[in-house]
Amino acid sequence: MNTSLAIKYAQKNQSRFVRELREFARFPSISAQDEYRAALNNCAGWLAAHLRSIGFKRARIIMTRRHPLVYAERIESADLPTLLIYGHYDVQPPEPLAEWHSAPFAPVLKNKYLYGRGVSDDKGQMFALIKALEAYLQTRKALPVNVKCIFEGEEEIGSRNLIDFLAKHKNVVQSDAAIVSDTSIPATDKPAITYALRGALSLELEIRGPEQDLHSGNFGGAIHNPAQVLCEIIAKLHDETGRIQIPGFYDRVREPDERERRYLARVGATDNEILENARAAAGWGAPGFTLYERTTLRPALSINGITGGYQGPGTKAIIPAKACAKLSFRLVDDQNPQEIAALVRAFIARLTPPTVSSLVKTQFAAKPVVINLKNRFTRAAVAAYQNGFGARPVFVRSGGTIPPVSAIHELLGIPVMMLGFALPDDRLHSPNERFYLPNFFKGIATAIYFFDEISKINFDGSEPCRRPTFPVNTI
Image 1 (cartoon, rainbow, N blue to C red):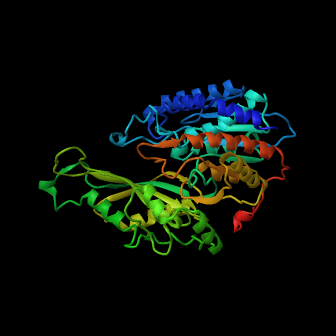
Image 2 (spheres, one colour; image 1 turned 30 degrees about the vertical axis):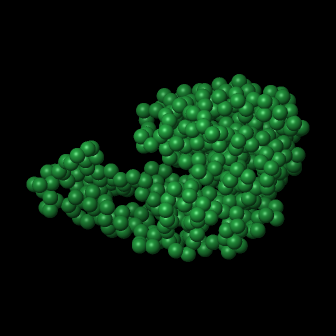
Image 3 (spheres, rainbow, N blue to C red; image 1 turned 120 degrees about the vertical axis):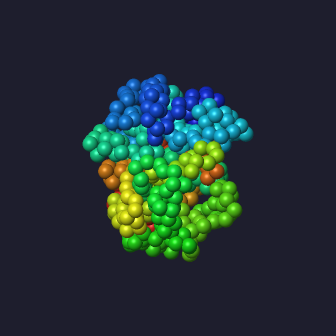
């Protein structure tokens, strides 16, 4: 199918596409906070209606135990390959609000960037795929491939209901391949295909002491302070070099392939680039690895937040009854989140003094994933990026986690092509999140070319090899 009409349509309608993206991003679809349930429902309704308006007559909302799924499909012919398109419409909480230059859910344009929560992660990137579909449907009245879309509202909290849906309805969503646009590229002139994601394990550690807050003058020095115990435990999670101290944590961490390390050293971010994007003065972590390797090839443990005791202005002389910390693990190839959770619980129990009690709760878990690059879909993606961005893509690992990618890969047994359009300094999960609009437009073009490319090739199912072979630039 010729792409010229679809490309011209997308170019002609760029301004409208941005207006619609701003409308999409106005929904405060914060999945982690129950007070935004109505906003998530409304956002799902808007998305389903939008899909119907561009030609997906069967777009519908599927209710789950928490936030709804949006499912749409268009089957053009049994002779065409079928592509599963995944994305998420939920977003991270915007706090701290005082650090935003503009309201997080009132997107503003400035210097070719659109600012607002979710404009890059993931509403803008998934919307690029939707606009590419629209370009075909409005010019050709048909798609070059069969398409099944599944968009969820729980990716930022672990995708539990989507994963259950995939397991129960594999026959409904079964496809030849999947495409996900929820990753970054190194630069505007350096597109990238992501082939590996770290897994994730989010835990909440709670230390409890007395039944209620106590007067620190009357009881200080006599009653063990839960906030102090929490800090002492957290301090023992790493050694002075940054190595995680939980016994058995590294047992399944395989040594990285030297050929892969050499390749990633050529195409990955430098230490200076990572520090610049982080706006940090110095790096940190276990020795022997670059900053890029520490964020992709190696596991990590981050303390996402600590609470306990009085948080208001001034002072309040108390011993708090409890203190909590949110722990986030990023896991690499072969590490199992359930095994790691068991190791953490055993370690915390050993460190907990008899004067207090500890409780570790799992918030969500996702396995790491590595996609085999030796397949026809990768070749189609390379050609699409070359046409859409005017440059051959590199192949990268991501330090982030997208729980449905590993689920789709394992449950459906199909390759998942991760074609990102975000930039490293898009401030994902931070105040002043933004999306570079030229990348939005190039992303639409890339998706148009990708749909066309995969319509031209013969499919023989997914390929069983789990790990890529390097150097990958021979593809």
